[in-house]
Structures are given as structure tokens and as C-alpha cells.
Image 1 (tube, rainbow, N blue to C red):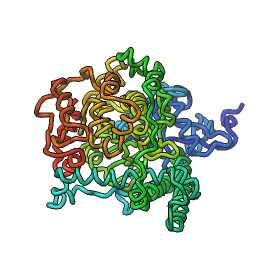
Image 2: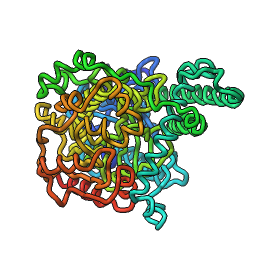
Image 3: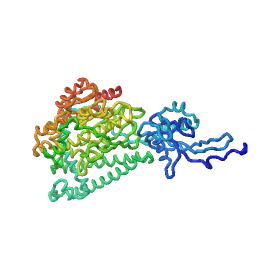
Image 4: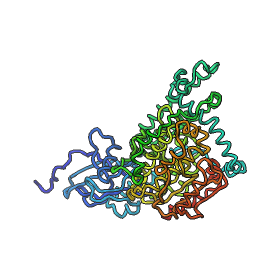
Length: 614
């Protein structure tokens, strides 16, 4: 072949390639190429687009194959040409590379496929590692575009929650954080909230049918008098809201697990879901007078016999050391897309619960602070009847932790929120079938804490703490006492307990919350006594000391609390050796304690500071 005639090109036309610029806060994902072209050089994940594959899908696939990282595509940054010529000037290969910006979702870099190494790098580090000037230019372009989006007016992000802290710090707010508030709260709970919640659950199950609604509540239709006209209209409205919620939730699932849907559409889906859920949840107000006047019972009671509880949990009671043992194979945790919020990003986790007695999978919402790299994580458990992810209400204690630089995982308890059993309201199955329901709830929720703690360890290097309020605190302290045999990555470093106690027989038969439900009367009628309930204490109370340093335990107790009795919480603090300075005792009751935390959040600040130090 004549010297002046270049050899024919290896390609007869340009080929389309895709590059993935994956950001994790202020760091980029880089891989060192193991094969030609550019073998041994640092680059970004990328490769050829396959037939039938979108650009976004190709970018995310290459990221997964070459670095073991899951990401979500944000948009296209630019397109560049990579042309390599031989010594004679002929084109050996020509790729038109379309670079896609993406945000890290999960996983740590592990080289695979065509990569020999994978790592995170700052933009300055990438400049030093990458040889190709054009790629360095594109990375800087992507960084500028991200910065412009953050500074641009009207960013696409979730709406902020109402802020009650300013109101609570006024004289009016301080008035609420007093024991009188507890008496009023219990009266409203007993006389309005519980009957209205039972009525709403029946209305949703009835789907607009008046006779079915009456059957759900064991009411004779003839006894309604003139109410059927009003009630029929209300039932139709509830059926419409329930259908809107189902549709919004279905769209939420479709878009939140999509990696290619436009961010604005995904944010809109979450806003629509929360609006629909909040509208349906607050529609219990329409049954306030109806439930009270009709003396609707707080629960559809299904108190078990001692034999039924023995059949389900007797083997666990005989071996309490292994009663909360984690399964040998923990379930994988699925994650949704991350949505920008006022404080950082929000996203959701889900996985099958380790306990089959609770039918629904576990769900949790994750709040990640902005500009935080590997922050500590707090896994927070709420109380009975609470549905914080289904109301447009304040999340004061959660936001307080996030503002201090902590990632917070807000867990949905069994039979609450997305996990509600059809025909019931949040938490009803647990109360209505106590003690069986309480034991099932704890069996699932304790193990779910282990799964979520492992997730937190594997997605960050910061310390992990557990926090809980009311029954959530009882769950967290029980898990802390039983996790000694769990793998180290499933155990916490610190504990924060609000309004906790012990003694299932005292809470169920003597606590004012139980009396508001009528649980004490239902248990007594079914033949349960203090002695028969206390037999199950090894499965409900933190009999053993937690394995963590007592100096990493913080407690907030109300000396006027008779829902989760104060004496029980104080006994735990003494038995565990919690330092007195970390046991905050306030002259408040069960409901005024959280109200007071919005005025004086010192315990939360102390807990956050300890986690940041660990």
C-alpha cells in the first residue's frame, strides 16, 4: 500500500456513545478504563448505546456495570466528538458522545465490566486525574449548570412543611406546653378522634354504600333517623377522595421509581400524593359529631385468648434471647428517586418486613441535609395513630435534626400510613387485638430497625442513632436491649427516647391512653389480668441492658405523663445507668412534652452533637 495513501478507517461512520456524569454532593464518579480505547486513563462511566435503549437508560446501565452505582438521570449536559486518527491522518474511530448528568442514588464505587478502578473525586481531583482536556471541560460545564440551577429562581422542589416553632415560642405557644394540654388532648382523643377515625375507616371500606357503612359499625340503618341524607353525601365524598388517593398513589409509585421521568413531574406526583392523602385523612372531621353522638367504639375489637397468643408467640417467650433474632438473609432495600426540598433531598425506602404476621412491606422517608457528605443517620419511630407522611403537618423534631446536619429516616410503623390494613385506621389492628397485635407489631418493627440500620451503614460512614416517641420509643428501647446478637452493622451507636415507659400490664390496664380507647375494659372482658399480661414482659419490655455505652443514651420524660407512665421511664434510666444530665425530666405530660420540645429543643441538640462526634 502506497505510503501516502492512508489505510481505510476501522469505522465507516460515527457511532453514538454515552457518558454518565454522576454527582454525589460535590464529588464526581470516575473510573479508570481497563480496555482500549484510552486504557489506563481516568474517565467517567460510559459506552455504546444499545438498540432500543434510551440515552438515559444507557447512561445508568453503564454506571451500574462499570462502577456498581445506582443513579438517576437529570438531563443532557452536552455532546462532544472523540476522534482518533492514525499516523497517516486516517480516522481509526469516531464517537459522538452525549454526556448525561445524573445524581447518585445508592451504592459505593466498585470497578466492574470495562473498569479497573472506580472512585469519587472532587472537581479539582478530576482535573488532576483526567488526561483528555475535552472531558475536563465538560465536567466543569456540568458543575456550572448545577450551580446555576441551585441559584435560579423558583427551583423545582418540594413545598416546605408548616413551621410551628415560631408560634410555639410566643406566649400562646408556651401556654400549650403545659399539663392542661394533656387533659384536653385525651378528652378529644376519647370523645372525637377515635370514634371519628373508626367511622372514616368504615366509610372508606363502604365505598359510598350506606348499608355497608352501617354494617362496618354495627349500626342499624333504621336507627339513623334523618341522617341518611347527610351521611349518604358524606360517604360519596369520602369514596371520591379515596379513589383520588388511590390514583395519586399509583402515579407516585410509577414516577418515584422511574429514573428517566422529568424531575418536575416526579415532584408534582409527590405533592399530589400528599395532598390526596392529607385530604382523605382529615376528612375524619366530617364524622366528629356523628361518631360522638352515636357512641361509636374506638376499635373493632378482636382481643385474643391466652391460647391464641401462646400459639403465635409462645416459642419466642420460651427463648427470649433469640426472640428478636434477625433472619439469616436480610431483605434488600429499594430506593426511590431523590427529590429536592428546602433542607436538602427527600426520598423513600421500602423492603419486605421480616415478620410475616405484618402483611405490608416496610416504608420509610429519608430526609438528607444539603451539602452534607456522609452525615450521621437518625432512624426515628413515631407513636400510635400518627401518620406524618400522610398529612401536611409540621415535622418539627425531624427538621430540627436535619438542620443540624443529620440524615433522618422516618419509619412508617406497621399498620400505619401505606401499611394500613383495609377497613382500619392507623394503628387500630395493634390496639384492637392487644396483646397479640402489640407482640406482632414489635416483632416486625424491631427487626425492621436492624434492616434500616444496615442500610444506613452501607450508604454512609457516619454514626447511626435510633430515636422514638411514645410507642416508637418503646420499640426502639426494646430493639436496643435485644440487638446484642445482631451483626455489628445492624446495631446503633446512640439512642434518644421521648416519653417512654415499661410494663405492658400497666400501660394496657392503667394508662390513660388505654382508658381512652377502652382497652382496659376490653382486656378485662376477655379475661386478661395484670398477671397474665406481665407474663409477656420479656417480649415487650427492655429487660436487658442495651449493648451501647450508656453515655450515648438520651431520654426526655414528662413527670405528669400517665399515658406511658413516668415512673416506668425513670426506672429504665436508673437501671441502664443513663447519666442524669442526659435524662431530661420536664413538668409536662405525654402530649405537652413534644410541644415543649418546639420551644426548648436542648435534648435534640445534645443528641445531634453526640452523633456528630461519634
